[in-house]
Image (cartoon, helix red, strand yellow):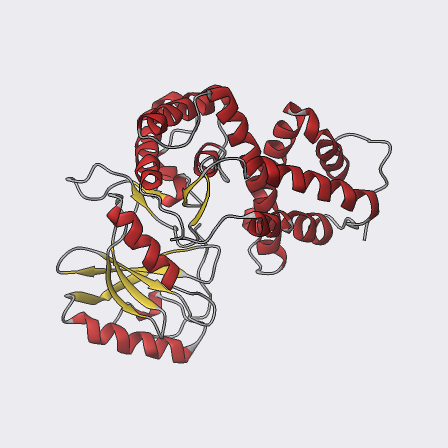
Length: 368
């Protein structure tokens, strides 16, 4: 997720490119210069070419630098705020599974600096034709291929479990941040009871599905168009939060995107093709596509409630308001799924009242 870098510029001793890279902490800037200086020779790095590549919704950011062997990516992840070890672990698992992921060329674990191979500068999101879904099918099928490879490599007890406790913590982001702090709704009384019942049902339904490796943010913004002419696979990024959880999760993430919506016929087309490939690969997606698709919808609902809360938190706590511009997309996803299943109608009524979509009797949701 690309974000603007800090406005505070601290000149870097690495070379003329220093002023193009901003630092909020002069000591960290100096530590970075020392680290980069030590690598420059062995890695053939051209310090003067250092420039921002992207940042994301966490405290990590990425820089790009040229070398005698092609461009490289540098991860800047302050160790007091970010733990790079999951990134290293999952990168290894994905590489073993045959996925196109960054190669770790150097890593200073104590300071949180990492040198990576560069998968290119163009995301799948940047090349998608938003006005003509069918033209994007080849790209989505490449994404499906990567997903099936990743899931086929799954083993238990390697990654953290996507269990009841974690699913519930994620769901609680919706009342804690979206409802209470963003919408100003008092989460108490009947509203609290409704949420608790709905959340318990959502978790129960989702955990009926067998578990595989879950990327957890498998979507076009995190898939890269190959920069190497000899590479046909999409690159995969932002995988450090991977877990072992329901097989329905990543395909829901891919087709019910945080930043892009498709008509259901295209969603169904790609999801069916995924299901067919997954079945052929021996993945536990079941023999009934209708049942699987319902599972994907329920899993997507959990994700959308979580992300609505995360986007509210990014705005209110972290000063990143651009994410909430997509809040209507999530509310639309949530409402569409809730409207389709009678068991979820109480959640639909709740969301409609909070959003002012319809006047619902029987609830009195107080404002804080």
